[in-house]
Image (tube, rainbow, N blue to C red; front, top):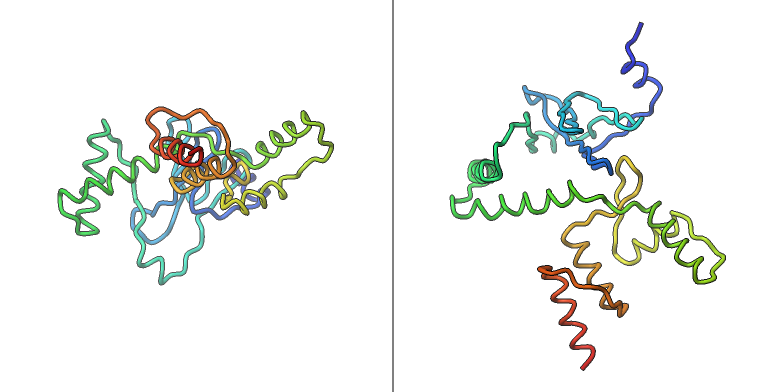
Length: 218
């Protein structure tokens, strides 16, 4: 008899992915097999690492995306997930990677290494805004103001796109990722719409927003 994982893979449609971030904190990344000939998926969930040709999360079965062989030969994927004792060890390893494969000097390599960590960690730890939850929130808000019409997820998604807030799909549906560009865009929209929001201490974008408000108020 087939085991449970085999039964699940035959009854669940597979989703090809280049990586996923789930609201639970689970993360899927594309990795290479030890010999480098094929792609697999690595799942980090509940402090456990699972690597295989397919990964099941929340009833969905994920497999690596298909890549043109010519492009695949020019790409390098990680083959393992080493354990780092502290952040200094992680940064040093990343810096050596940039020195080895990109040709950066020792002084230059620390900059892209720090950028890699600072852009990846916020995306990993923060819950991504889901379009379906955003839709429920907006409908609740407008009902409190006497509106009877309700928007659906497609309409809200289109509105987000029209505001230059692109959506991506992950295991929970369509989400908006808080990249540096998106954060800057949100601050700009708050300024354009004249929203009075509390500034976050230490946020350079909030500081810029206050400067814009001051200029507009002159």
